[in-house]
Image (tube, rainbow, N blue to C red):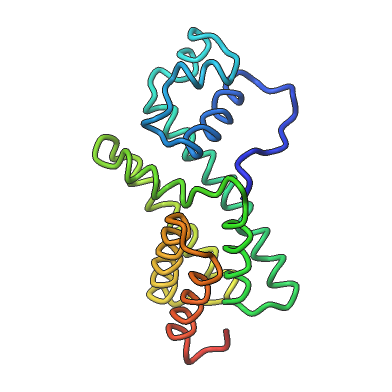
Amino acid sequence: MNVKTDIPEKRSAKEKIVQTAHELFYQYGIRATGIDKIIECAQVTKVTFYRHFPSKNALILTYLEYRHTLWMDWFNTTMARYMQAGKGNIRALLATLQSWADAPDFRGCAFLNATSEMGEALPDVVQMTRMHKLSVEQALGVHWNCADPARLAASVMAFDGAIMHMQMGRPANDVLAQLSMVLTTLFHDEEV
């Protein structure tokens, strides 16, 4: 999933701030990205920034809402494309993850990164991460026509582990082959 989106030049100041925060937070981390850098890159004034976001914490939560919508749209579209191309459930997920890992701006899961950075200081981040992961489980359930919550939760846990290993620099092909083994074992009694 590419962080930079094709966005029309005519954007509101708030959209500029959120999209800039999205790019910078994902690329460099939340703590490493200061408000002044966001203001500079979004080309807005401090007054404009604080009119829309009274604190960095408010911007972080808006960033995660934006990221959730953007990522889930990408995930669902990509999964559907691979499913329609005749890939089985597991192969469609692996192809989706491969396309994400191959993106030049891949930095892992924005939600796990945010929880790692901000979880204790901003508990709402943990809550948003849980909501995001539940949405991923539900999306997999729809794509895979699976109603088993335990298997879906286990699939997302394995999925997250694979993302972390790819983020740490392990070759995506190796990680995805291992994820395939885990998921095949998990769904051993079903068509996958």
